[in-house]
Image 1 (tube, rainbow, N blue to C red):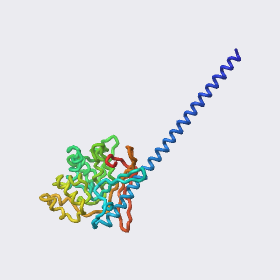
Image 2: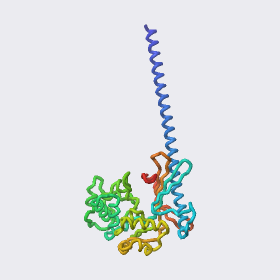
Image 3: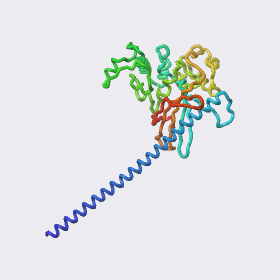
Image 4: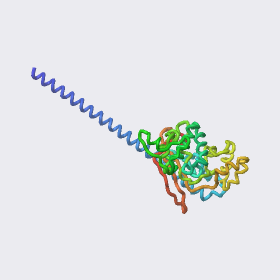
Length: 323
């Protein structure tokens, strides 16, 4: 009996050892697969980042080309000047792609320049982005309260009393915005309003803190910003976009025939020419893949073919329009 018992114990030990070895082998196999997937994921992410960076560099090259040739008539295909109004351009590198757009910051609404006197432009933009009128009024007044130096409350605004009552309290800044992301601290502004969603473009695409202008550059303003100008109509906005597609507008008087009877009203809100500060958004992606790698940057073009970044975010939020 003792011999049989010892044989049984030995058999059980062998079975346990085999089970443990099988578990170890399976764990090792699983770890190997995980490491392989992680390596592939890292490689794909790096490739998309390089594609997005290529889009940024291509846009900077196109800006230098534009500055050097802005007064010339381009007559052959492939050498057209890139537009600076947010028009989307695409490029291909190997089996990868990038989508990139350039916007002159002077074609956006500068929220640091917004005052009671010209706040209708921002209010109109919000409504054009399908923000309900009551919410738009709240957002505009709260932006004004956030950055003005006093504690006087606008009709739909908010000062320290509101912000200090929040679960994580803080005070109004009473100074200009340093970043656009700072808007998320302002009452009424949500992630969806600032960055947009699948159905609507975000406010952040049409505003800036870098133009230092109270007037909107009509050479660069996208239609959403043009439509925010008092007195603007869809027909006039389309006519301006068509006109500037042929040549850069150097003087507001050039568009007087287009503005017609609305010239005296609209002209006080617009300027012409161009600036040297541009936002560049780029996304690197692969065909038939939903995910991409986004980069947002703001660059100042200087003399002697020099440039410098004043903003660079990588990765940045990726939107459907970019692909």
